[in-house]
Image 1 (cartoon, rainbow, N blue to C red):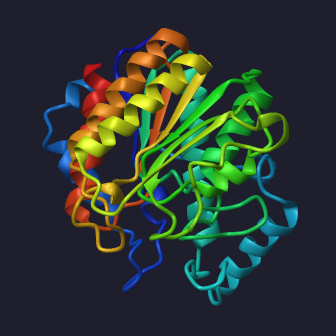
Image 2 (image 1 turned 120 degrees about the vertical axis):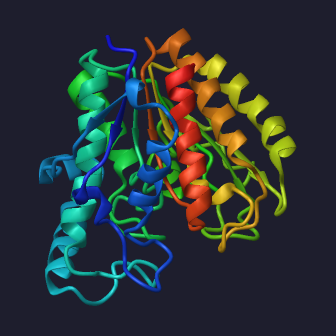
Length: 315
């Protein structure tokens, strides 16, 4: 198994975005890769290139009716995929499919033992539900990856860890009654920020009650608050003993994001990634995949994601 980190790039995933003046623009990919190129990590990175996801792969998490809707509205190139956050721009089906395909390629590479660690910058689209788009997210690559790991590789105890400022509601509610999905999410309190969910009392339902961890933070929470919350995440993951770790490392939790109110630095992202690498080495044969998630201040996106990759390389 290579100690090199697999990082994905390509026009296919760069195309995921909604144009000006939408905050989720297609420049985020290139901003990150320009910063990564300056980080002196070239000897420790291999670059992967995405493929389109198959319809059957999208259907591991999403309903056929919803997949058909995205395909149709993408071809029409007008209207909305949700209630007004996620426009049906031309080609969005292909771009969203490439995001999923990149994540599944990374899963295959890691599970086949070619790499221990991988990172996909334009991924982590954690708001999309099984039957609808939400919050700039068309297909939920994280949810699909969980189902793919289960169906293709027979894993059950998969950890999904989310440090985006927004609660990962699409993943949470997609697996709310699943006791085997290990879910930990540090986010801005939903009383102040979209999607309004993720209260500490939301710990799962039915057989899964008590198996999920939501840690809402007040607006203005800084790195010290992050570290206090992260102690709970580490303890939770230690007890859960996952077989595979998926990390959603949205950069909108850094100070200066235009649509959120947390005040972390990129060092929080570096610390989280390093911690998860150590846990992955302990319980998962080293297997961890990072996804970029949100982030609408371009400097923050570039620095936070680069620091994540540095931690994947160095830990």
